[in-house]
Amino acid sequence: MHPPTYAPFIGTQVTCEAASTNKTTYSVTVVVTPFVGAHVSVGVDEIKFLVGLSGDVTTVSYKHVEDHKLPPHLQDLYR
Image (cartoon, rainbow, N blue to C red):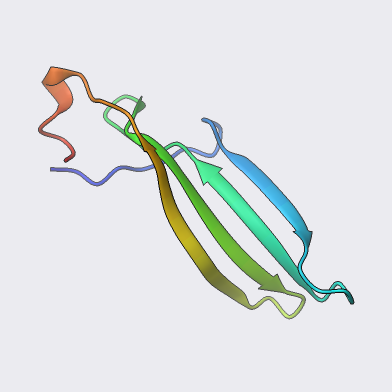
């Protein structure tokens, strides 16, 4: 079994907005499409971070949004 990976050029979306009124903290949401094998998608994941001006990064949430069914010949790569 292999863990999925992702490529930033496949299905990645990034949203950034101020999370505080003085704009010292930003909320960043990243949506990625993890894959196994030759870029066969296993689903969609959404990760939210808070990023401070000092460079501090805090993970706020991780959500597996949807599953994609793998073809039979790849089902042993990921469960």
